[in-house]
Length: 337
Ligand code: SF4
Image 1 (tube, helix red, strand yellow):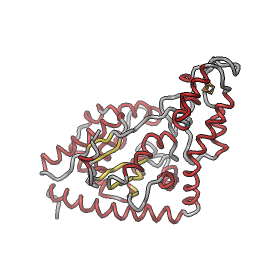
Image 2 (cartoon, helix red, strand yellow):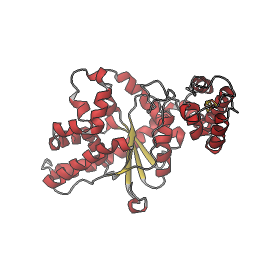
Image 3 (tube, helix red, strand yellow):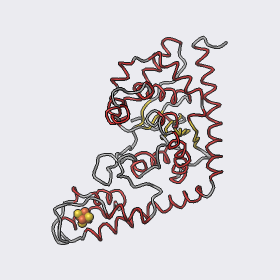
Image 4 (cartoon, helix red, strand yellow):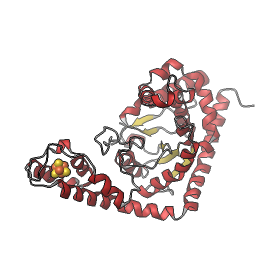
């Protein structure tokens, strides 16, 4: 993790693939962190529609549909468009151009060894069947292009994504050693990235796993999801002693009802707490946290032209920076005709 002081006045790049609305896993795992960091660093958030196509190439409508949803989610949790630049990847052609240049600097074997890519390919067996696409295997190269196009030096990531940053650093070093000192080497910022479990107890909350609570879920949707959440299966009657470590309701109380968490677990263990009442309390805690987010989201949902304007303004700013980088890169590569 980077000590904040050492890195003051540096640029952050982070982003999301527009493949679905954001959920509380994103909220606790990265969005809260982004909101904090935007006041400390110049922040760029990429809506990574081109990268989303690497595993959704057969469903471009889904990617397009989710671009605005992602921007609204960002704004509703407190990303401030006056200080943070939100931009659309496909409108920055320099990123694609850099990806081509960088593809000479990395071998197929190195990409295949990348632990993050390896895990993701294994998870996408259905899509890739016998062989992975060139585009998906190469997405760390395209991420190196995203990062370096904006001279970003701080990249907030989860631990599982550290190999992607290492891959980018290798590309930068190789580029600089061949073409001369041009690109900045980024560092990973581990921050407080937490992984949040899904409603079904799965280690990961995921859009594709159907176990997520979305930031934009209505009160009714949240009530339904929590009422169906997994509790200690050994507990039949209200006064049976329970084990909160086997209960997803307890797990979420630790996120949303933090101050009362110890007491909730204690009452559960002593059989002094009914599961239905416990779930109702959780529903109310989640709604308390999400209501201001929903309210802000409603504001933007009613103003789609404003959401578009924010994205286009951010993209214009990002285009200027990417063009400057491309000029430097082409000069270094003797492509400055
Ligand atoms: Fe889970 Fe609460 Fe039931 Fe205990 S009382 S098993 S914490 S829902």
